[in-house]
Length: 300
Image 1 (cartoon, rainbow, N blue to C red):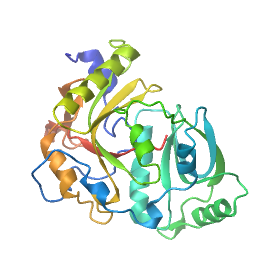
Image 2 (image 1 turned 180 degrees about the horizontal axis):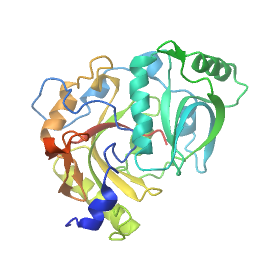
Image 3 (image 1 turned 90 degrees about the horizontal axis):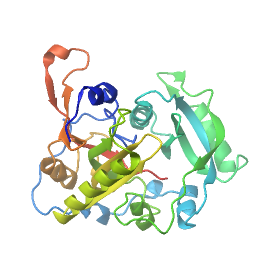
């Protein structure tokens, strides 16, 4: 497919944070030592996750194989409007909070269809003692000696269902295999969308992403597709990794994740490489090929 001026106009800035909206707020240059060997990327799942990495209420939702939308109560820290990049901005906030406020746990990003929210925890009711304790903890969080989330509140959010009849190549099938493992990462290697150009129908976007996934599978990669119909965008990802994939302090990647990055030098957009500014504040520094990005696997 050849990208045209309409595509580039509508695309500008739309994928800087990744389609899944859960891109890690880390430099693409910060990575661990390179590794070589087999293409399989599931090695990192052999290590057990620590207790605080295992989910609670959300995982019960997955285990029920919900066939209609479920709701959970959660503490909302911040909201982002539906402008381009809202999900990426929300995820950058989650990533930064890992260093600025490590006492905040079970942070997650939810797409509302009209924007995004950063939330903490999953509870059955607003009266849950754990929910109330988490609300107090969030409101009492200080960053640079100032209350960071004084206006945080408990809010009920509707989650998208995950069903048992799911395509094994769909990224959401991973949540059925590992319902209690949190966090889970994957490497986003490509996206498909019309970016409001009208060039591709939703069915065509789905077809292209699924076809790319099948091609990667035939080459021996553990590839998946993810459809976000609200945004008319589909992602193609490779590999599944647990919490050991990225060091929370240094941002260094595990050998298995670094190996995969070496095998995928470019993040493809509608099958083509995309050039991005080296420095968005100084375009005279030139451009570079956009790299694949590790992203969190959604819980919904």
